[in-house]
Length: 279
Image 1 (cartoon, rainbow, N blue to C red):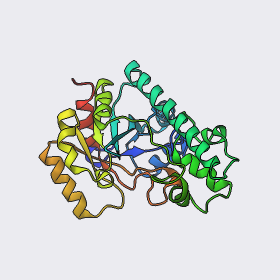
Image 2: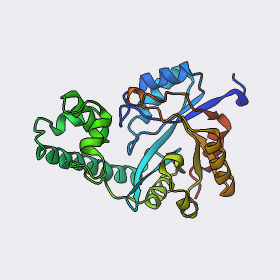
Image 3: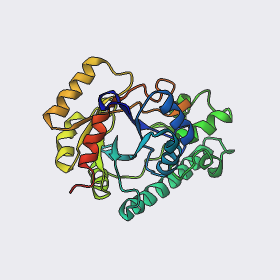
Image 4: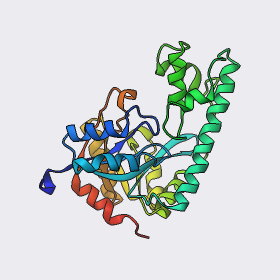
């Protein structure tokens, strides 16, 4: 038995059920190889990868925390809210995710139509959706098809030329505020955490999120300087927030991070568990 002080967790991992390239089995293998005791599957707007990952993890005694990364927007800025220890059987959660995922598919349909007006007429909704194991499709999947068919030189070029904001094929995503996302996680028995604040760069909103029920801040994130980590540690202390962290691994989709690149002490998992399912 590994002593608690020597156990570590990576609490931000994506699978092919959203925009990652790895299957649940591959994620579990990567976590075991990294020497982790616990991970969380935090796919975008879906919990479909949680069950398969848990089943794969049983043979290794690896703990899988049910998680999600909910999309939201505030004044045109994407803000992602992580949820941990959700009740995956919650009817409230299932209903909300069905609506969000349907909106994701509709968004891809609209973007494909806009691409046709740009002369790109050989992309179908079916082949884009085939890249995800769930209905949680997004721009990275469409970018991958654009690259595969030779319309762009790279995934980054697909965003720069067609799919990024202010580009010809861009379509806004489902409108949900961060406050709604926090509330959904809370009503689903989970613990809400602001994802990668260093990327979001909307620190002035954190106080309001705390009032709405935010319980944690993703302080530890890959490729971030120590001074920035210290800055967010201080913000977390100011608002009495749990300091979480994870690799944000997406497999081959993100070549600057990998499972276990960022890990936190297991006591963070215990802190999140204590807050879960509380009013």
